[in-house]
Image 1 (cartoon, helix red, strand yellow):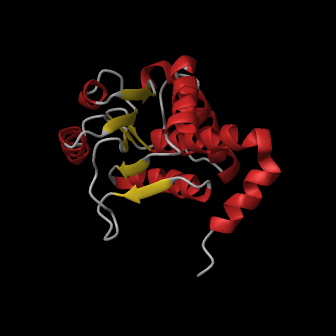
Image 2 (cartoon, helix red, strand yellow; image 1 turned 90 degrees about the vertical axis):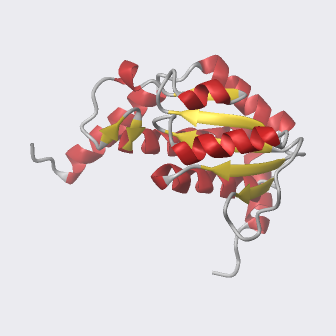
Length: 189
């Protein structure tokens, strides 16, 4: 199967849209409300592995631009997590061992855990306090790299999910929000 660039783009967008359509609207609304109402005063910590971690870091950056206090687990400036903090994790398979370990540790220190998973019924889903789940079985087959709920389609959909969350948060005051965000944008580039 040889696909032109335009055909490949259509496949990628169609697959991401199909996977995003599997999200539970009530869980997404709860997630947005949680981000908007509860998280601004909390310290947010982020952890994942592989490409999911890259996507999660992009979301952390946007939240930082919006004025949230964010920390990337493993970075030299990451403080200790504790009670009242939130650990946000993402895993396509929902079984990534280092993610599960960080969830357990966060709970030991009294932090809340919010997970975005790409596979229903995963171990991560059982351990997190709040879960938003994609359901690849409802989205149909994928021609992209895929394994156990994770893979390319999950990562694309995860990025679109997070960008949609940010847009939803800033849309009521978009121009003002973007001006404020640009004040926090990196200037040592």
